[in-house]
Image (cartoon, rainbow, N blue to C red; front, side):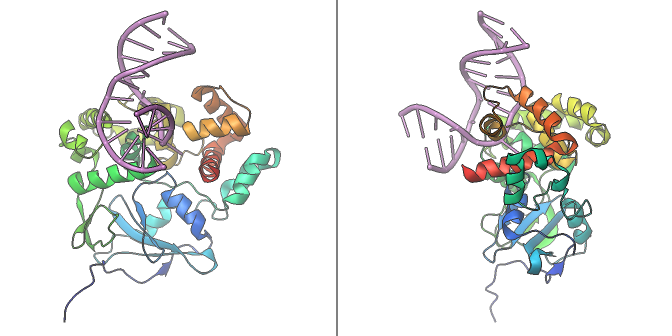
Length: 309
DNA sequence: TACCAGGTGGAGT
DNA sequence: ACTCCACATGGT
């Protein structure tokens, strides 16, 4: 008999968290809406993705209850890791009710349109790497850069082949994680440029060199209070306020972080009458107007604005 | 072709 | 402090 399938062997589908209900559209927005850059839609409608040393498939099952499966290989605790990644324990019914939608008609509309939208809890270092790639780039291009870096500088995971042609690995190869910062410090700037990073290659190269001389610096930064953590991140080459806020929001679980990019600037100009405001002014408005969960509000505004555009 | 993309850093006012 | 603009690359 001939083995024709080049698909990886996956475990069966298993329920993730019974309380967590997320529909297919919202799941797509969560995994592929600009927070993370390593998820790809498979032909069967499930999402296949990687984070840290984990790989998994996820889909919305009956009653919008999430189901997951893992690739063939050793058990590395992917189920609990996925629950943490999706922040499943934090108010599965949705944090959005705590946002000031009662006094903000536009926010209320965004929340109605995107019920269950969540903020991920990604590995901190990976989030920094991906958002160092993000400046003046489309999401699809950031995903391409991440895939190239994983393929050329990441480590193979102990799991089977990946058949998704849009993923970073070809049939018969193993999944590859994104390179860690120590791994990146072994790459030359030219190596990184070859991953289509453009001028971002220098930032990543310099950041890798900085971190290589300071073991524990990133882990300490993750533990600091928001203002101190943000200030430290902003000291890294290529990291300004926007990227620092993205790292703290999507990688550090700091829901008060309010990243201001061109979409948020546009949304605040057209929906909130803040035309002409600087990013810094908009960030201040956002934090005060939306409160301690401003980052979640930001995600609703971002997703809604991109959807109507 | 020109313009834009989940920006940042540096130079010149 | 504010305004411009280069920085690579790919898509519309």
